[in-house]
Image 1 (spheres, rainbow, N blue to C red):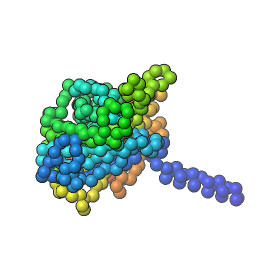
Image 2: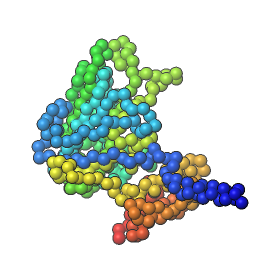
Image 3: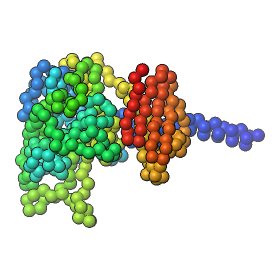
Image 4: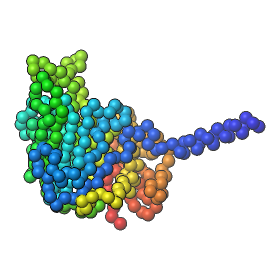
Length: 366
């Protein structure tokens, strides 16, 4: 009798543990909460000269220090990076400070592949749909590589490198000497002024209003180097290839790629000059979309192994279709053929969102 009771108790405990286990177990790195920034309004634009001593910058708060692109899975970056932002009715302003003991840059042309030098990069998706986003890179001599992506590379997106950010201004200031291995430098600072019109590209992105939320992220590329014949050269592996770069970011995607817009941070606009009393919450639809992204990532893995998509949730290791999101009951479902699928999440209020194998969302209007 005691043995039977113990068996029953064990079954109850196992069932409770299974029920309480997160749907995201095993993929936690892809579902950490993104960073957010309340960006305040200014009526006086900063001078774009690379020097961050403009008094107007005192209005803005520094972000937290950058982390490794893979998040907690990797050590903290060796050198500190932080930034702050402001906006007015026409421009987004970004100010960045980076510690760096060895300043060097050898790429001297516009639209060179700037991340082959140490660089700073920003990515913007104004309407948070993972489509039609912008990337800008700058090195320590203020050479720019800017591009437009209609969709991410993993969805067979082709970058439009010929696109230039119309009206954007940038400036770099060095705290040290460039390409001089004989001394130790302190770092470099960058300022950007980015017109909102430049982030249109034929789409209807008006200037932001109170409470608007954009997706944005920032990255710093850092190469390991040594000095040969008075010049910085990248360290190589046993096969003679460059060692992988280090990628330090504001909001960690959880994998070595910045081209996961759904993993970027949030930028919330306020028309006030202070963020006092302003709160941020991840939008409800984005909380719903997490479950669709879960299906999407698991389908990617399933397809790589089986050359076909799973036709039900259990085949993906998703044990239940019922979830509570912000106090609302949500139901997850999937329809699939070998080469296509649609995953849908529906809440008890009738809100429906779906995603397909191309990462494209659909949300019917009520």
